[in-house]
Length: 106
Length: 120
Image (cartoon, rainbow over all chains, first blue to last red):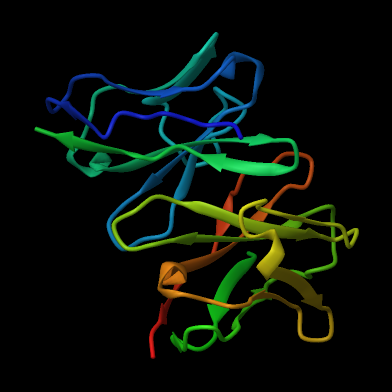
């Protein structure tokens, strides 16, 4: 079965740029999406089809996907960006989530 | 504005069947080309997709749960339901319902989630 690998944690200084990676075999050939989940809340879609932002998601959020790594980039990080982030793909009629990355804004 | 709301027992005994319902408000469960999903999350852990049912009637299930899972739609109540049989403590989680656009498997619309504990 297909697997997605994310770092357990990423830290970023306030106002700086955070990059959260999602590794998978030839993930560049798949559509990747990203979710933000604050503690006790349902996930929110922040990126789909690699680099498309849903309505209401700030332009500070961007995505890329190439070869074996997809990346969610958060520019000018704010305290409110502190959350868990999950990548997700679909594969042969099933959905796969990454293990999640905790983003800490220092 | 379409909203989703999960409901069902918060406590289920081991070996029994977990049954949850997701009520769709502000829209119809049979309109468009959407698919209706169940996703769960054990405390402190990541997300796990359980399965989905589409307006076409087709279903897809997580291979690891397929033998125990059934998802159905009740058009008269504008709801869709999850049934997970032979539960164990490992099935204790927050269960979310969510909608995908049908043409792609990502989840824009989510319910708030409901905690189900499996315990005797």
